Amino acid sequence: MSVKRLVVFSGSGISAESGIKTFREIGGLWEEYSIYDVATPEAWQKNKTLVLDFYNQRRKQVLEKQPNDGHFVCVDLENYFDVEIITQNIDDLHERAGSQKVLHLHGEIRKAQSSLNPNLIYEMDGWKIKLGDKCELGSQLRPHVVWFGEPVPKMDDAINIVSKADILVVVGTSLQVYPAAGLLNYCPNSCKVFLVDPNELDTSTFYQSIEHIKEKAGVGLPRLSKTLIENFA
Ligand code: APR
Image (cartoon, rainbow, N blue to C red; front, top):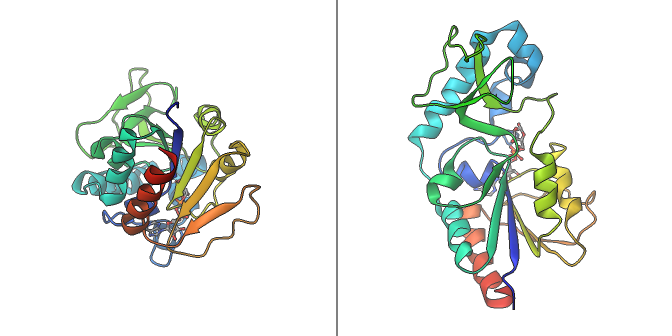
C-alpha cells in the first residue's frame, strides 16, 4: 500500500501555545494594530518606519519563541505519511520543529525582500530591517510578507498540493482570509478533512464534511495523530 499524502494547513493558532499572538481573537494583533496602518502596500507608502517597526517586533518575538507540541506532532507524522505543511504563518516554528516540507503562503518574517523586485529575497541574521537598508538594486528592504491587497504567489503550488491530499488537517485558523481559506475546496472528494481549533468556526461555505476537534493544537493534534496513524497509516 502506498504512503498516504497528509497535508497540514496551519494558521496562527498552532503557534499560540508558543506564545505568539493570533490575529482576530480577543487580545489578538488586529485589535492592537489596524491592518490599514501596518499590513497593506498603502501603509508602506504612507509610513515605512511604522511598518518596519511592526514587523521588526514580530521578528524579534519569533526569534525568542520555541516550537510547541503541535509543531512536533506534525514532524512525527512524517514517520507514517507523506506530509506537506502549508502554513499561513510567517514564523519558522514548523521548520525549527523539524518539518521537511513547509510552504509559507503569507511569507516568512525572517527574510527581507526588495521593495522593487519581490523575487529578490534575503535571509536575515538579526531582527531589524532599518530605514536605509537596501537591496542590491538600491531600493529599501521590506519584510518578506504578503500584505492585504497583494497577490499570494504560492497559491498555485498550495492548490496543487491540496488537490492530491488523502488527509487534510486544518489547524489554528479562523478561515476568514482568502484566497488561503479557499484551499479547503480544492481537496478531492475522497479526502478526509479534520479541523483542530478550540473555538466554534463557521465552515458552512466549504463543500467537504469536516470533523471538528474542538481542542487547542497541543491537545487536539496529538489525539488526532493517534487516530490517523491507527486508521490510515
Ligand atoms: N490551538 C489551535 N487553534 C487555536 C489556538 C490553539 N492553541 N488558539 C487559538 N486558536 C485558533 C482560534 O480559535 C482561531 O480560529 O486560531 C485561530 C486564529 O485565527 P486568526 O487570528 O484569524 O489567524 P489566522 O487564521 O492564522 O489568520 C490568517 O490573516 O492577518 C492575516 O496574514 C495573517 O496569516 C494570517 C491570516
